[in-house]
Length: 66
Image (cartoon, one colour):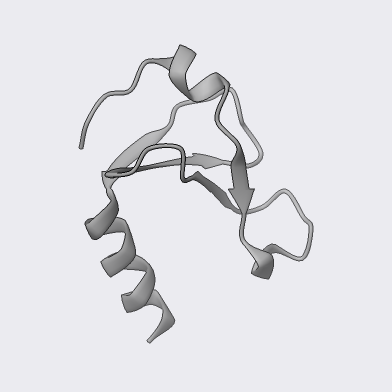
């Protein structure tokens, strides 16, 4: 996991899962960083973020799909 300054994340475009149904009860990710995937709680967009290596995040998503 890596640290990204909050200033860098404040300008990021966050994407909510299409499975969320438009609600606020899900995770959001940004693809603003080529090798990292920041993740946040849609209910608390100003709260803490988790940052994963993109390969690790992709592996997690694929495992959840199965």
